[in-house]
Length: 389
Image (cartoon, rainbow, N blue to C red; front, side, top):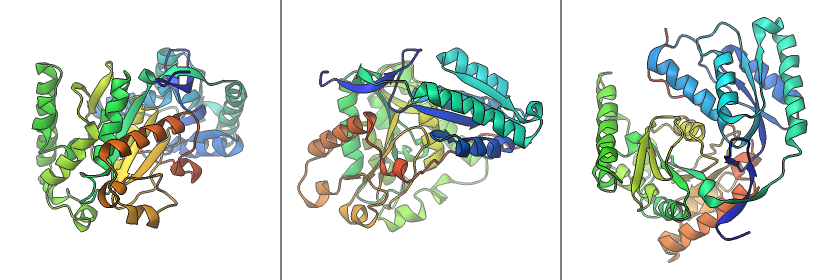
């Protein structure tokens, strides 16, 4: 194996996973308990819960369906049991067919109404998951190129150190992956307002530069249409307590996660990039919603910086928590994986910290568990862009 490779799971559609999960995926809140019940019975299966899937229409419903299909299609998932009620707007059958057609992976569909109620649906879902888990146990890792990786980047609970320690280190790590032919996703549209001109200047084409401004303009207009100014909630109270003063200051720090390579494209929430390199995904600043969107877009692993501390994780993708300062790292050792505070108080260079982080990314991709995985943090949140009917 060469330095440009890691050990991963090659899937039928050619993508590469860094985990080998069987996912129980409810498409409506009514099916959450079925998915949870079945995951409890079948050791090794994972599930997500949410409050959506019905009373949705138009672009909002399309985005929810895209996210469900993308999440189940993530290469970290060996197989999926899609759980539905049977009459919801977010059709479980369409989601199951979408995952199967896109990936060729094992997919089973369980509908509570067709099964005859909760107990029978739980048994049907658990039986399907059990068979998948047995088959999944035979999957073996093999050397695969780093160019197959899609790295999600995120910051939550930013402080005054974020823009000078952890975020630049993440940017250097992202550059290293892009130089290997891989992909890094920059997200959090609300936390790039005020720095959009810097990203547009790095756009690979004039069309990509135009997308940058269009996404910012669209988001600002959507928020203003509600009668509120997003500057009333961004920076957040925690950001302010951590030393940030304006949305522009926060954005200039957040943009560092994108490194220095050209911006190859801008994609919608939960959309899988069609190009390699640095990609901007239009997501909200909400930690769980952006995490879900990037993973639905194919990110097999996420690096997540924080100055205040956060336990957030995913049931199917390792999330590496990076502390911007050493005091918080020591105070939240249960949840934090990586200390970037040495850039501030121990003379470590951004380049050295970024290279060290890149090594941690590869280790996690090859099986080392992150703190959020060990502690069972399986957060999942959908970005709603329309009213509930």
